[in-house]
Image: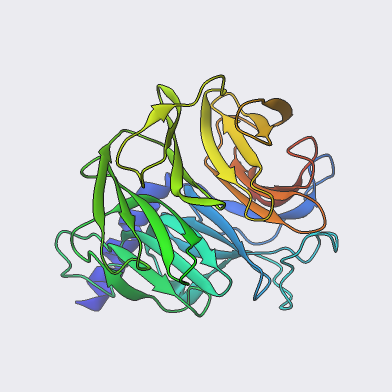
Length: 312
């Protein structure tokens, strides 16, 4: 039975991945890539770096992967002490990880669909909210198991030490919010969105990128209004240290704003971006998944170091 599940699992996820193979190319974007054995990573849903471990992650259709960062300069704050030379599928787990965020140092939050070997009977196959404190080696169910598939997650710490978590319930097309680290949830606005971004200075405020433009809620996701004069962003993050807005539109232009009112064009991604995450450090490092693969940039996309490149 397990062998049949492994075959089924591989077929399902390779189909989802669309035959996408990715290989290491730890070099700058204008240098010749150094290839290593291919890894079937698939579509990248989320990115993140954990400052407590120095590990950088890509959450994908085929699991959570550890990315090589040892060739990045010392200004990048999350350089893993382990010499990772190629992408590593953590725990060899084929978990379709949809929503993903580094909620705080040492804590990963995720959602999506399970590895078919580990949870073959979960019906519907929705993980709800899951958490990991060991770098995605193991995951624990927090809430909504078998109920919700969060396609996006973001979190901010509250004064009492709990996490305010916002999630996009893709099945219901609604925003959900939790004020107790995901134990219980309140139902928010019905909204078709691509990305959620919390304001670290105002936990009740959350932004959403939509086909109608950038929207903002000041009531924990219960209602949303357009953000005047904002570019039509596809992805957005707010930096945890300065509250700066960093976004990318569907054409791949990177935008920044200090106040959400005045925006500046920066660099460019390659094609439509898939995922965006802020790392920080001595320079404003960000991670982007686009047609090149996964890149790290400290100048908003003007230049980039390719961590993972698409083969073929």
